[in-house]
Image 1: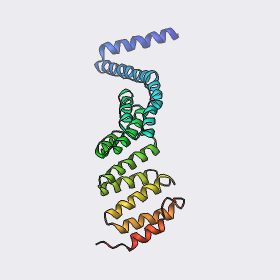
Image 2: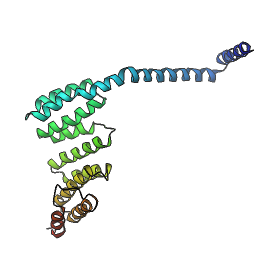
Image 3: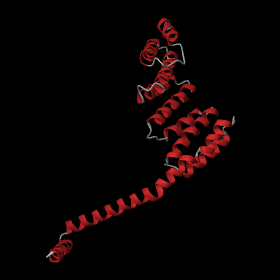
Image 4: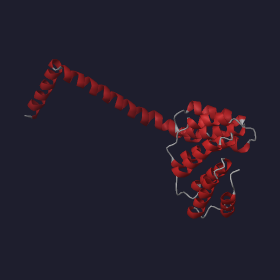
Length: 217
């Protein structure tokens, strides 16, 4: 009975495929979708994943140059190799972040910004640092309004974190002062004092007092 039933199903499908144009098209579409899906899974499992794991250590040589050399050019050369070889992998994204810092050392802040704009992190901390570093570039370019926006974005992305949030709020406050927005600066300093009492890098009370008393000329 099972064989008869199976044969009947096969015959029914065969007849529909021959006589039903919509059924035929749907079958082709489904087959193509399955092939693409299986191809992607095979690529991810056997090509992307192993290469992605390799990329996570590939940038170490470039990082070593960046940390130990006063001249950024050796690090730039090495990091570009990693980016070209592992583009789209996790290690290449980290290499881009380090590369941006090397261009900042050379005073090429706009180049660093362009690299950071092409950098994509799934990790919240790394995304936060990327946004903050972009703010640093704009600050060095004396574009304090843009720097302020990036610092606030970085602080809010990981809001509540005792390490990143107060540091970027502090940088945003310093930019607000540069823009003669002393009330905003004072409010940001007060927020740091109220929410991040462990932040001891600066004497917050001193900055609050200064921003509160400063008049716009």
